[in-house]
Every structure is written in C-alpha cells, then in structure tokens.
Length: 451
Image 1 (cartoon, rainbow, N blue to C red):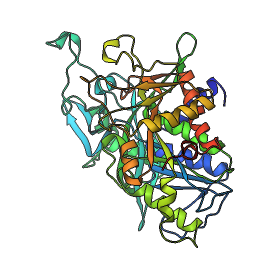
Image 2 (image 1 turned 180 degrees about the horizontal axis):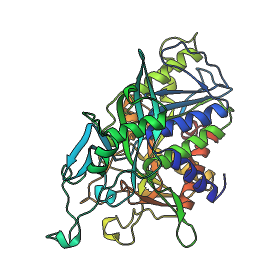
Image 3 (image 1 turned 120 degrees about the vertical axis):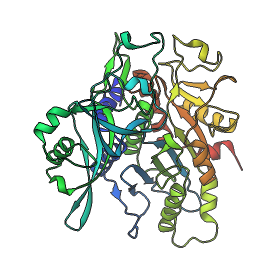
C-alpha cells in the first residue's frame, strides 16, 4: 500500500471494527481470504513450514503465525508484533435500566481511563456481542446498531455554578439517555426487570431472534460518526479508537502481505484488556502467548527435545506496537523539549527508565537498523520527569516470554478521547515499519552478534 491508501484502508476498517469482537471478526475474514488456517485450542494442531495459521480466544484476541519455509528448530526464531484490541469506553451494566424524571437511562460501567468529557453531546449507539440461549444451546452473535439511539446531554452553561470548568460525576452524570418513559410505556406496556423492553426488542429484531432468547448483553457504547480524513489537505485521520486499532490494522495488513520466505516464524499477537491491566485469559500479562508459541513449536519440531524452545525464544525479537503522544501545538509545555514526536514525522521509539516501556538501548539500535535499511523516519519519546507515564503490553510480553521487546508507536492527538486524531503520513510510515520487520530477511539478532 502507498501513501494515503493506508489511511483510507484504516477508515474502512475502523468503521467496521467498532469493538474488539468486531475487530477480531474482521481480521478472521481477511486472514481466511488470504489462505490462513484457523487452529482451535481444544483440538489437535497440524502445522508445517510455509504454513499460515491463526487462533482466537474469547472472540476478542487473535494470534497469527506465518511459518517460514526454511524454519528449523536449530535456526528459526520468532518475529513478534504485539498490539491490543481494546479502547476505553462505557460498557452496558448487567442491570442497565434506570427510570428517572420521565426518562429511561442506562447504567454503564466505565472501561479504562477514558476522557469521559468527550462523550457528552454525541450521537451514540451500542455494539458488541449478545449471548443467546436457543433451546439448550448457548451461542454468541455480534451486533452493531448503526443508528443513534443514546445520548449524554451536557448541563446548560446557565445552570452551571462554575462556567470556566466542566465538572461531572462519573456515577451520576455518565448515564446515557435512551428514551422517553412515556413513549416506552406506550410502545411496550410490558416491562423487563433488567433492561428497557424497547432496547431488547430492537436487539431481537437486529438478530432475528425472540426476546426470550436473549440471555446476556456484552455491549459497548460507541460513537455513530464514521471515521474520515480531515484537514485542509486531508492530512489527518479523525476517528474513534485510533489507540490502538491503528496498530492492529497495520499489523494485520503486514502479516497478510508477508511472504512465507525465510527461517523465522512471523507472529502477530493482538491481546484484549490492555486498558485495564492485561491480567486475563486474553491479556498480555498471562501465559497465553508463551503457551501458544510453545505448542506451535512442539507441532513443528516433534523430534526435537530438551530446551530447544528456550533457545528459539532467546534468538527471537519483537515490537510492542501502541500509539504515542504527538507534540500538541496548544500544550507544548507538556512535552519534553528534546523528545517530542511530531506528527507526519515517522514512527516513535518509546523509552522509559522505569520500565513502563520494554525498550532498552540495544533494542533502540536494532530498531534504527531496520528503519534505516527501509528509509523510514524514526523519532524518540520520553515523558518529562514531572509527568506521569502510561504503559503498554511491552514489559508484560517481555516478562512472560523472556524475549527482547521494543515499544514503538505512531504519533497522535487526543489519546483516549471519544474522537482521536493522527496524521495520514504517519499511518503509512507505521505500516511500512511493521511490514519491513516481517519482510526483512536479515536476522536482527545475528547482525548484532548478541548472546
């Protein structure tokens, strides 16, 4: 892909990938169309060199492998790209219905560290998956209600005691309005204990099932405004969930396009629950990645014994791909003067002395070798010493596997807002870097002669 094609492709992707479930489902379809075989965790695996495989867990995480045609236990290694599928958002509570002053509101649970003020006064809807009970069978189905059905109205300035500061209570004020109680009672005289009957009726219609089949709702509040290119020269991408679906999209395209040449196993791991600590069966702070990698090695190398997998892990290398903070022209004092990534200026190396990022300086050099060889601009980011610093899956993936991981990202504004912004050029640089990592036939570890 060239130039703005990456940005335009991302816009099409993100308008479908409205939740982690939808992102994984989109990825599964594209992978199958390109010859990848799905492996199921509860069944035996068959794998071989030149094979292309993927595994999903919970429908919200996905792990993809391209085995090099020259892979052997003696010479092979993993090339890992790690991303995450989740973003901060309100999620529907198990008992969502609230009646208040003539309106039906929704109880929500706040997922992650969102800029919750950015969710007010937007046309919102619900998406996610629905758990159904049909006879004695339990199944899940994805849903995305594409029209606006809920809204969070802000308090009028005339009623605010402090007009200079927007203040809100997370429990009291972040309850979206669903409908008028009068219209709900007219349309649906019958009532449901946990959820608005009208909402359940709409979901049943969307899925072509009976309300009685609906067992549970795992729904996210999402913005209905589609992603788009913006700016005088269409040099920006305006979208929800740029953090971290841009990384997922670029990694997906990179692994779909990479050939099966070489001696390494190329791996894309897209974890869930990064925004809330990653401690789950689908999160990076678990044994899922190392388990899947070891299981694949046992299938590929049935006659190998001893510590061959440990040796392969020690020759391996990876990147944790998560978004980075671009130098904000209105808040430049928040950025470190010598380590402020600029939009339209390339991929970001993320460094933190306290190990919020996994990057070390040997890893920095290896990343620069790759970038220089492929003419991709690279920038460096650290936070100021008087500023907090976010973290990524990088340190967790490194700790769980013992593999050197380098944290990278693409620069963006408004991280964790309902609507985020990044440069179209940076989308292309980001994709190009990830693709180069998979396609480059050099072994970064062999080049560096590392022990």
